Length: 351
Image (cartoon, rainbow, N blue to C red):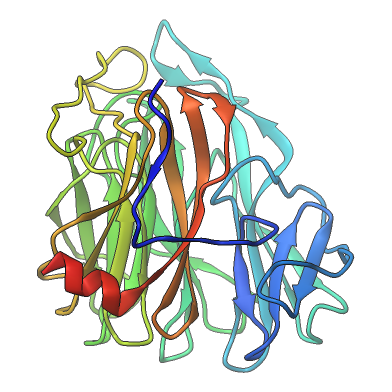
């Protein structure tokens, strides 16, 4: 098996934990794990003892919980609740069964995490990983999420939003691109607010490309189309940097210089799809996602995977990238992939 290759432009990130993180102030970070919130004053090398928040959090499933510190100082946690988790799928009908369940919940704190209130279910049914949770410059809190639907069994995506600091939530319209299978349809969305005020969502599909959706009013998604970003059936993480640029980290459709064989459809999807996860790549946009720089491979593990990225800008231009899943062989022999890169340095190499 070929050893792990990490781009020399990456610096090893010496931290304990895999995120998510929020900045409490210039020095302190907060993270959340199943045992509660923790604080670090040394860039994540050491952490305080956890302070309990709620039941149902998972440390094994990446992109299942996020923290947000609002402009008014409220800490909002949104999470997939594993207390009642059950995945059940009927292979004869290729449909989710009636007891298939994984709910989306939220809880918030108005005293810097000392106490937590309004623990509530936002969505019932079966939800899963998601990669977008942010506050718009107008003050609306937005999470882009997914849900498993029936007849045919497939994923759809939409957003939930709050205009009162996470106390109550509403739901947008659904984005449905069809498909049939337990990993088909529109799934695992990531999103940002653009410099022009619109929202942009990038959506995992089995169709060789991310699909993209735009919201003009930060409530409804009315422009939906295939993007020009090739991607395997694997999620990406999109964030807006302090510079105003967008950065995307994801698994491309194929590795550099090779064609990755597609999986036969079966129960996963209606059509054969690439599940390439051997290389993790990064790209930037300086024009609100209209165009993207040449992708740069951050890391490679042939025969294994580096996937489900978490992206965090620790300081202006200092980007932390952590793989939620990193295995030397398929889903075996886990290892740690945690790196930091410099925005301007990468841009010079991508032009």
